[in-house]
Image (cartoon, rainbow over the protein chains, first blue to last red):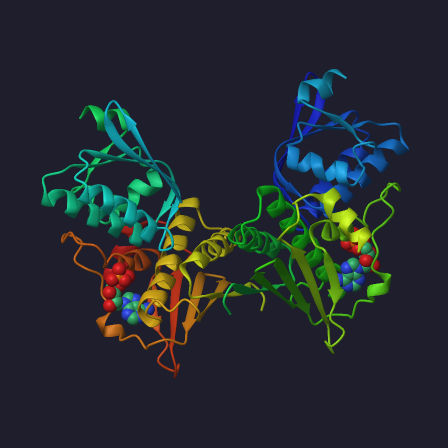
Length: 109
Length: 109
Length: 151
Length: 151
Ligand SMILES: Nc1ncnc2c1ncn2[C@@H]1O[C@H](COP(=O)(O)OP(=O)(O)O)[C@@H](O)[C@H]1O
Ligand SMILES: Nc1ncnc2c1ncn2[C@@H]1O[C@H](COP(=O)(O)OP(=O)(O)O)[C@@H](O)[C@H]1O
């Protein structure tokens, strides 16, 4: 997994690519929680190049979301490939997360 | 590996896709030698969707070429991905086979 | 040995990518649909992540042995470790309506496999046997769940 | 066990895809370039194809054990079988200027690995040890060959 933080129209976007498994999750968690602790909001997560996610990846986003909600911040998941989206639906987390079809939709929402 | 025989501008094209290894080679050999024995010439092999080839695959084409040459027929290899082409160069077989950049080049040659 | 492959990996999460690659290829050999391959790959990853977390408590220098068997009407995965014995009666996913990290792995394993049992005969460590029926069933989660409830 | 994985497959060519998947992932873990991954994957496939053809003479129900070791300055692959003993002095690729099927595998194995040796201590069957140096060398065939000639 690789992580790149970019800015578009003044909004911070975390671009992820590759596989988010138990090996990658601790790295992602550190990055994500640093941004959450800094109060960066909204934070958009770009899933476009994520090919795989397991429950440790999902748990990391749940943690990020809880951190955001603690101060009224917003975590927006965008451009999820169907296989990744399916795991969120299966775990009933698509009801809890703000999920957008594209980065632009997430930014303009 | 999958094999499809098509015809374009009256020329026969064997479209291959997937991995040509020791498991796939006997299937390919049967198909190829049947066409060679029927005297189908020129026969174009479309490598565009071949992701992998090992020495058993290479050996199969050497056999096919020899069969073709026996009656003055032509075997034309086309659209080789660079990794596949590299194996032909390494084995010095790029000097022996007629190799074309595209199917159209092979047909029009 | 026929139609069976065994892989032994260290209990370090970086080897999960190796495990997923083998799992996916074995699933493809068994003739599963693409969707089924994805489900099983994820389930085997989750089961081995659990061994790393729970049986080995994060010790990354231990071994996990995973056997794959393609049999006429099922696909079987046997996962062995030498770690702390699991208490099967305490292995339970969280209520999915409750939002918190964790507790999802077991659900993902049970979605892909019809049987999830620890072999009681194993003295030290654990031997988890996962079986997915492949004949006469649809590759469909709903069907699978209904069938489980019926049986 | 650390930085090592072992897979056992049946001697049926359909398992070569499983083997290639593991090989590629192990190469990636060791930090090889994409080109090096492709070379090593092909070499390991060739070495195991040779076991199936020559050591087992096409019997598809036997076993091949492949061990991968990521060590600080090399990537090692050990391939074991219980088949007919190879006569290392007779293993030779064909002259590449001679066009005929066969005899290419050994060249492809030696392109990817610096060392190709059968372990003489093994009593029954074969244990082939392949070593690729990874430190201080370029991932480049020409360099590799020059180095071999020099030494
Ligand atoms: N291999 C195992 N050994 C021991 N306990 C386990 C094992 N797998 C699962 N468990 C127990 O079952 C619970 C639920 O597992 P899971 O759904 O994978 O969620 P998580 O591991 O994220 O907590 C775990 O918290 C753990 O207590
Ligand atoms: N594992 C092996 N056991 C016995 N003989 C082998 C083995 N590998 C290679 N050989 C011998 O070396 C020759 C060259 O091998 P190779 O270059 O792979 O070509 P091929 O196997 O296509 O003939 C083989 O024909 C065989 O005689």
